[in-house]
Image (cartoon, rainbow, N blue to C red; front, side):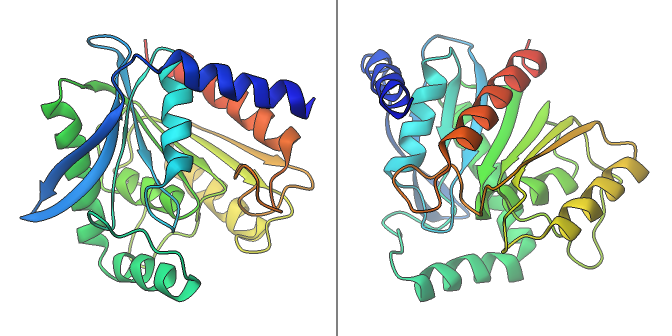
Amino acid sequence: MKILYTLFLMIAVAATANAGGAPLSYTVNGQPYEGYFVSPSPNAPLVLLIHDWDGLTDYEVKRADMLAAEGYAVFAADLFGAGVRPTKVEDRRQHTGELYKDRAKMRALIQGALDAAQAQGANVGNAVVMGYCFGGAAVLEFARSGADMKGFATFHGGLKTPDGQDYTQAKGEFLIMHGTADSNITMDQFAALANELEQNGVAHEMITYGGAPHAFTVFGSDRYREDADQKSWQRFKEFLADTLK
């Protein structure tokens, strides 16, 4: 099964070799950032992809290319800054911590990435925002701002709502995919988010995968769980097909 899935990844990446995927430099509030943009066709539905706590790496590029193979334009955003790709845990905590403390900046950076995608001709009126781990928390932050997107999706992302925030302004549909064995983001937080979304009338689907720890989709890591990764990826593709008409 693992051999077949590896072959699938190779085919997905190869299929986008001529799709024009490339790094994209842009600025937000005068500061430089470098994302990755790929579009298989003009006016393709857009997925805005938000990275994990190590910044925009080959992992996000691979996921972007996999989505492009499915017919979606993808802009993998950069929330840390051009050239900032922390490899040490303390540095990752520093960069994510700065944004957790400055939620207005986090929202502005996501909007800036969306603007950069639009400048490339991306169809931001037919778009979903998705993210991994830290990126998942950023996705929910953007959703709480009232961003007018068709959907928001997270893979093993942060789920806790900061004090003073809520989902009263949230729009679009939500897909939350989580590992039941995640010791970083507990099932209590998962349940609390479900209650918040329900109380605010936010359309949502929330799924947990048994035995899946935090970061269960990260290829090659000791936390990777192939079954949960494949199931969540399939559900995400179905979500995109249903949400982005």
